[in-house]
Image (cartoon, rainbow, N blue to C red):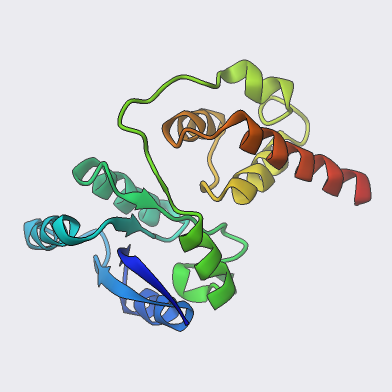
Length: 185
């Protein structure tokens, strides 16, 4: 089993069990959005020892927890699972993902850059049919999954591309994979 030295922050006990099936690591659960100052203090102390990886569900509540934790811990890395990889009978959560997908998401965790440089703009997204196109939502979903940055609308994607400092090479490789899949499909 692969060991990850970072501390993984998940939402609940089922997520802990799923992550433990995939990797050997330290895990802390928020137990939903109702966490308070006590948990933030625990995470603050933990972040002094090791890096944090925020690994919440790809649903609305998971997104809200991620945003709040990112505000408190701006140096934390972020791991994402697509809804397709974390969905079981309409229930979306880390606990539903395979160990392989969990490991892949954790390996691809990214930290937001403290000084966000603007490398991408709306034209980059529009010119590559990631917004404002007939199938742009589906292409954007695939693109975000390839880059392991979590799905979002055009504005959210643009923010993530710049915040995670995605290189032009990574951007192009993701697009090339989508084009290859489209041509083979």
